[in-house]
Amino acid sequence: MVSQTMSDLGKVDREFFEQYIYPNLGADRDDVALGPRHGVDFGVVDLGSGRALVLASDPVFVMPSLGFERAAWFAVHILLSDVAVSGLPPTHLAVDFNLPPEITDEEFATVWETFDREARDLGVAVATGHTARYAGCNYPMVGGATALAVGDSADLVRPDGARPGDRIVVTKGPAIETTGLLSIQFEELMDLPDETAEQAQERFYDMSPVEDALVAAAAGDVSAMHDATEGGVHGALVEMARAGGVRFDLERDAVPVMPGVEAACEFFDVDPWSAISEGTLLVTVPPEDAGDVLSALDDADVPAADVGAVREGDGVYVDGERVEHPERDPFWSTFEEFMGRLEG
Image 1 (cartoon, rainbow, N blue to C red):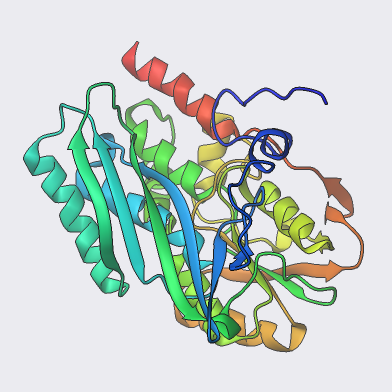
Image 2: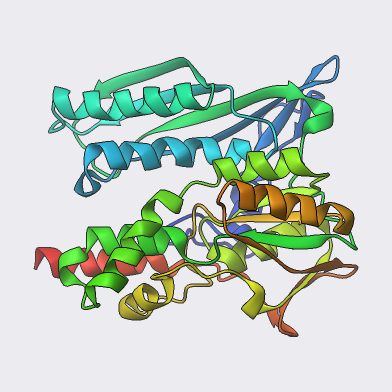
């Protein structure tokens, strides 16, 4: 077996996952209906009597430079998004804060009050957690959390459910998170017209797919959903097609692109299609339900489009050309580079 090396920054790749993580998953329990897979957003525990528990874990990601209220809004929506793409509304949250010593009580109060507000709005209860300051802990990764959803198994949207004949729907388009975060974090370094810079910064509050997922799942017989996090739209398409054992064919020009994205990505020299795009949702749905899903998203003011079809086969083809998983997301190295410029 060839030894794999962990990526310097960002999530581990598929090869590392399959060599080191996948073979070591603890006890083999019959109630685990969906266990860990690379590129799959959540796990599922069968509770019996037609009920399912969906759960997903992520870092608590807080960037003070965004302002603590805005940073906390993004943090809690990251935590809830992977559960929401199951089609079951998030119900519970367990949060572990490993805080840097310099955070003040007032700053933490803003973070936690924002968590509370967003959780209440979405019907989510905080079930347990841990909070402490520790030496050696640094922003933006200040802990971890597990989000849960309890609901009917029949309402579950599995990540591997894409079927030949389905249509592919994409909300918001590429590089939403990349654009929103970089344009705010490095505002003083950006050399863009004021209107364009403002459009890029407006992408910040597009960085949640929670509403997208719940609206889509309620509107039609959705077969699969996946949010475009690390690896961006291209990475998410590949992961989703691979999970379902199918081929995706789509047209690039059909994918919505939000204002400010192209200009910001050009300025930061980032490929928008392979860059992290929290807030972007990929949906597969039977053709007879695609119109209902698009109408419901439009009613919720979520930009979306039918961009292609699911077919038998494998791989992702954009305008007839095969697209591979980018493996490494350019966001992290770009963020590190511009932080150096900002501090230099």
